[in-house]
Length: 429
Ligand code: CMC
Image (cartoon, rainbow, N blue to C red; front, side):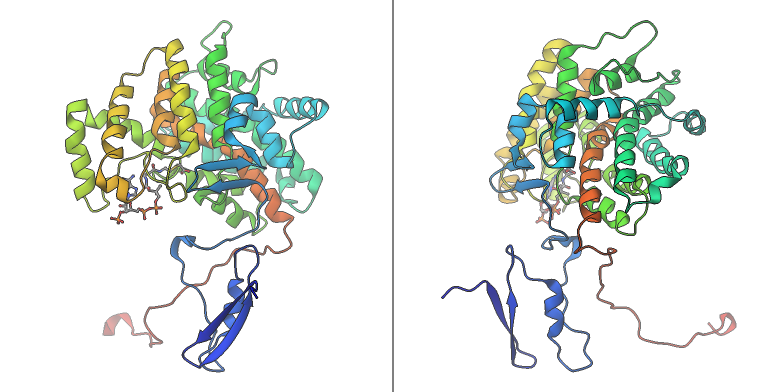
């Protein structure tokens, strides 16, 4: 009869062990029973980059990478992108259920009324160089928020946690817009509480004196982009959030760590790199030569915006973004780089190198083209990824703190360095 367990024989000793299988996993700690000798530490798994390790149980986001499925709390991303708003989706991600009308109203009010930042934060931002990257400014100022709200370290207090969630969700847009305006030498624009989350962000970015009229098409496009980026289960930045949060650091410090992880070009920095890559290629005629360079570089030159650790068929977010691009371009005018992106995608998808490795356009391949058409400078792209991901990071952090299985994150290592040796004084070396 089938049994939910795994039987393993340790050929070093001939002993057989039986481990329970739960949710398609065995507990890594069970392996420690397997010892080659009584004083042996016990067997571990070696899993660089955690490619086959479930670090937590989660009820937030489900991904089936082979089928291209992404659900938040069970709701397909396609439905949320079509019908929901970013704030409603963020509520869902954080609370587990869609809000009632009253809950949605209260949630929106609470976030809207936390968008102001202390004036000293503004002073702090003034200290950055004129050409500081906005993602660096964002991470630093989010970390600095922990000094403004020292009570945030009470991470075991549910009410306190909720207050920091309002603050972070709200202030992230203000800090992001301030970072942009700093780089442009523009006076910082304060939040307008009468506008929607995305509408307010757009006015804080682009207001130039007088009233800023928010384009409904661009506002909706931003809502959809924010919905698509809100969470993506245990990726690099979320693992950073959980890892730092597991030491019971305050959520501002943990979010700053997550922002730092997202900054990298292999993660949230990829959207910026796609645009830089398209500009560097320069023309459609030069695409075949670039593809050749990618294929022969041994992994050094990558087709940015392609490939994913989990999606091996298509990235459902990329499909939605590609469709939406046309609507945005009707308002903004067609991004001239679109033709290059389409041709790059066409060539790559019919090339054996990319087919064999299951490399498809990911969320970052087309998002940058939309952001650019909307008027965002290229170095703001990772920031635009970070703003909505704050809801996912906070939901994962909150879930972790309530999870009785969790402890401070502390992986093991396989030590291959020198054995014990005696110190040699400088004169004798
Ligand atoms: N261009 C060319 N070759 C690639 C690419 C790419 N974009 N991505 C992977 N490969 C190759 C890689 O060289 C390797 O080839 P080989 O087997 O010959 O050594 C093979 O495909 C497997 O790559 P990997 O690095 O082991 O795959 P991974 O799952 O560790 O990496 C990835 C996933 C997203 C880091 C990678 O695909 C990549 O670097 N893509 C470009 C950066 C990018 O677009 N990142 C955004 C990801 S989506 C947004 C997010 O959630 O962060």
